[in-house]
Image (cartoon, rainbow, N blue to C red; front, side, top):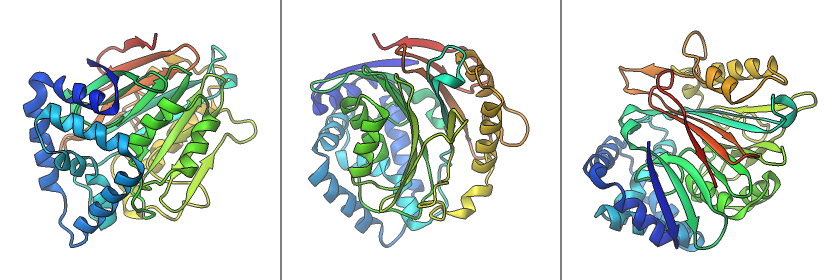
Amino acid sequence: MRVLTLEGTPYEMGLQHGALAGSLRRLLVSRIYRRLQKLAPHPQTEVWYGEVLALLEREAEGFLQYAQGQADGLGIERDLLLRFSLASYLEDRAKAPAAVAEGCTAWAARPDWTQTGQPLLAKNRDQSLEQLGLQCVIRARPASGYSYMGVTTLGWPGLASSGLNAAGLAVADTHVPSTDLGPGLPRWWMMVCILERCQTVGEALDYLTAAPRLGNGNLVLADAQGAIAVFEEGHAHFGIRTPEYGQGYLVATNHFVTDSLRGRCRVEHLGKKGDTLARKARMEAALAEAKGVVSPSWARAIMSSADGTGALCWQDPERNIGTISTVIVSPATGVVWVRHGRTWHGRFQRFALT
């Protein structure tokens, strides 16, 4: 997997990211155009896009600088890159069938649930198979804030999957086809802000509750001290999940479950292949039986399960989508294991933050 080392201001890091696309630039730019061509037309699309852009200009100068640098490095207009990154949000606003099914299964386990007595976070990323060749690891040293590393898609302005910072805070996201939507910060940029600014799950939750949000995802959090949480990200509403008594784990797939957001999902999404409900149930059942057993090797095995109802690792060749990567994070040791591609094949690569 390609490794990008980025450092400096948001613009400088974005410029380095774009320039490091190298021989993949043509593939990446072609994908951007294809994705935008698939975006379902709607009379309000320009209004919705304009609202988000206006908010970003007020609230997220760093994001726009990063995107500008990235666009300059790729030799394309920034507007094209922003529209590309917001395509799923615009489809959700239009309540249109998604051109790309964005799945993902993410979970975190507390120290009392693991073999080593250290927290663990893991994620399977389900996306278009076109992205297989564009997956990369970022090692970032921002001009201010904590250093971090993460897994993302080449050319994406921010972190599109997961990350870990030098303070021992880990985060992973999942997309939710929400109906609680509005102008806000993209989830993939809030992940960058969390990693640059926060040391603990508590600090990350404080940031997320105060930030303006687009409203279409879950964020799974774990820190080196052993705290874990799921933040359900609506635009006007939010939900926070922490482990119930006697339960040392949390799972998030592609729907909301808290009282404040449970009814704010597009229900037609819930029965698709790669069913979000079945994946969550299967992962929770596995974790419930694994107290004191959860480990990186256990995580590798369970995240490779490709059979039966609620398979965590799946492919749908007809729609050209499926699981494209697995990430396992040990916040206390600063180690991330990444498996690229169709995840029941291949080996994990080990990356240390320091």
